[in-house]
Length: 214
Image 1: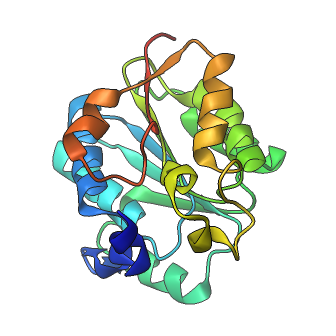
Image 2 (image 1 turned 180 degrees about the vertical axis):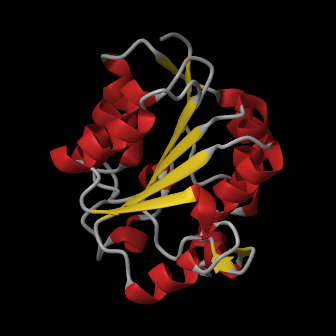
């Protein structure tokens, strides 16, 4: 795992022409989840180059129906926006620029959630404990029973500190510590260890959270 981080392994891959910045193992896991759950709405925080948005939209296209993807980012770069908007999968995508924990953004997301039967959430924006904990508290109410909230980059807790020395997150202050705190006070979600056990390599250990009740 150390070598994959040192060599920026996740930056080697794209999905339908857009950089996805994910490990292939986690892409495969998300494919399995999406095909099983068949969500009619996927919410992602953190857009970057848009590869994950395109991936989610392409899965919904294969499933059929009118499933949609919402992507939220505090800074959607102009060149990324142009490339996403001209992509064949863009018809299923809505992008919101703003902080994922801003009340106005949450209100906008809530409007999209209304009437949806199966909602899946992927959290992959700012990786500090406080921010991810806020996201968990704000976005997990949208997740429906049997679906998932996937918290990416929980691996930060297990990484050598040198890899996060120039970041506002690190050991003791990251998505995994946020998940741990969140689960002490929320009984709707459990860690689906079957997923990470079969992946062997994942950026989201303890991050595949399954919703077990409404």
